[in-house]
Length: 168
Image 1: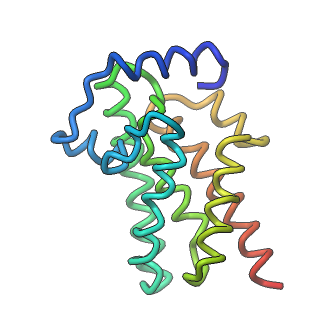
Image 2 (image 1 turned 45 degrees about the vertical axis):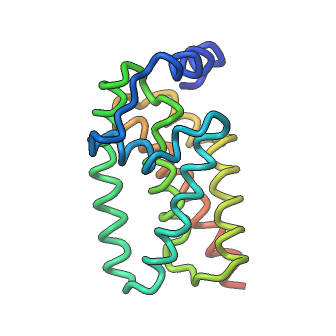
């Protein structure tokens, strides 16, 4: 969803979609329900990632990376299936991609209130403004892969910023 008309249509479609939180795929795609926020669902989806990061922060690097990799790969199916079921590509309520993007942002970053806040702000900036190549991926990739890849790229851009900041 890159042009304003498509976003407007998706927001209007939000009122027509029958969400089913009892469906495990939609429950995950909707970020455990956080994506149903009427305002800023992507921001609320990212907020849901913070407690996940809290529980994952003490894991070994390999285990953390493996979990995030599994979340990203399964996210292609989860987001694609949910979008198909909803009848709207990259519906704003689908926020599994934001969760994965934030967890990528925070990879190998220690849990502190300022790292959590900085990672949140950086990820939201990259996700909302979509500088190149994120915008290219957003416009040219489709399906579940297209839903996931721009947030994965935003997560990696934020990850690089976080590591530049924390390595100084």
